[in-house]
Structures are given as structure tokens and as C-alpha cells.
Amino acid sequence: MSKDPFSLSGKIALITGAGRGLGLEIARGFSKAGAHVALTGLNQTRLESAADQIRNAGGTAEVHAFDVADQVQVDKVLDAISAAHGQLDILVNNVGMRDRRALDDFPMDDVRRLMDVNLIAPFYLSQKSATIMKPGARIINVTSIAGSISRGGDAAYTTSKGGLAALTRALAAEYGARGINVNGIAPGYFATDSNREMTGDKDVADWLSKRTSLGRWGEPAEIAGAAVFLASPAASYVTGQILAVDGGYLAHF
Image 1 (cartoon, rainbow, N blue to C red):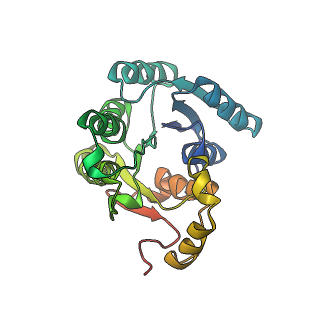
Image 2: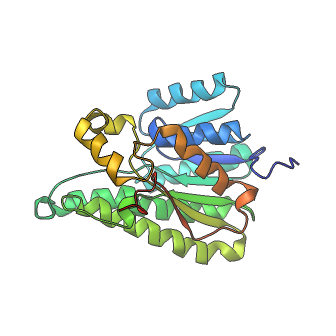
């Protein structure tokens, strides 16, 4: 057994939304720490490319393309992981939908779809994953700074992420007796592909220079350290917490 408190050697980790962006960076971080990573998402081609990147860097990875909101598919993937590895040590509920529009413009079907992906799917994935987890396992929910603060034109997403933060605390309370630690990461403004339009906007950059303590966008790779910490033995007495990785956004005014 490694004496490195941040080692994930021998661990099996499932990361949703791992084909690109923050999910892929978390998967890379886990792989570098020694974990075998199961990359999941909707786009098979993108996932295979991500897995190749991890393998080319010396890691091991597998791919499962499925819709996290489809419970039948979730069951099949978790059954496959259990059959192949006999365990699941780390679950990262990272995948999420964003739908920015005024509250009065939201048809309820669209609200339900967003909640299915951002909140109900993590609930179900956590519930099912816990059945094949052993003491020492970890669940990490990727929430958002929008789970703590809000602004106009983003009501459904904000509600879902606030709910995910509450779910994190509830799961920690529920699964603590089983030796499963549950925590969340609340990212701030990261320069991911999905934010490409904003990252090229000088006004946004100027605003972040004043609004955050570090005065800049986060680089996607900067999410990995927090995830590795929460997944590792170093965080053995940390549970029910939301760690903001936001360059000081929430702390700065």
C-alpha cells in the first residue's frame, strides 16, 4: 500500500461528463494519482479520444457512453463496472446542463429535463453506486458557485446546483455509517470549451479581474487537485463539505 496520502493507486473511479472540460481534467488528475478511470458521457467518439489521451500518458481508462438521466442505462454501466472490477471506489457526478433564460420563459418540461440531469441523475447514481462501494469510498458532486449565490436569468440551473449541494450534505449524513465520504466541488469561472465565447470577451476578463481575488479565469486543469484531494486518503475525515474552487469569487467583494 502506498504511503502517499494523495495516492489513488488501485482505485476504480467513474466520472460523468468526462469527455472534455472539467470532467476530463478530473479524470486526468485521478489517473496521474494511480486510479483506473471510467469515462462516461453521451459522445462515444469524444470519450474514446479522451481515453486515448489518458492511456498515452501512461494511465488506464475505459469508456461508457450513456445518458445519466436514463436509469436503465445507469444500472447496466454500474453492473458492468462491478462485474469487471468487483468494486467502485470513487464516483464523480460532474455532468450538468446549463440553460440560461428568464424565469418566466421556462416551459416546465425544460425545467424537468434540467433537473433530471443535474439533480435526479446524481441522486440515482449515488444511490446505486453506494451498493457496490466499500468503506473508504468517495462520492464527489460537482456543484457550482451558483449553488450559493444567484443572478437573474439562470433560475433553473441555480436551483439544481443548490439542490445538489443539499444532496451532498444529505448523502454524507446517510452514508457516513458505511464509511463513504461525500463532498462537493463548486467551480467558479473556468476557461472551458463551453465558456469559449465568454473567455474571449474582454469585458468579462476585466470584470473577473475585479470580482475574483486571483483576478482571472481558472484553467481547467486547476480543478484536478481539489478532486484528487477529496478522493484520496488525505481527506478521510472530510465529509459533507462543498469546496469552492473559484479564484476567491465567493470570498471577494
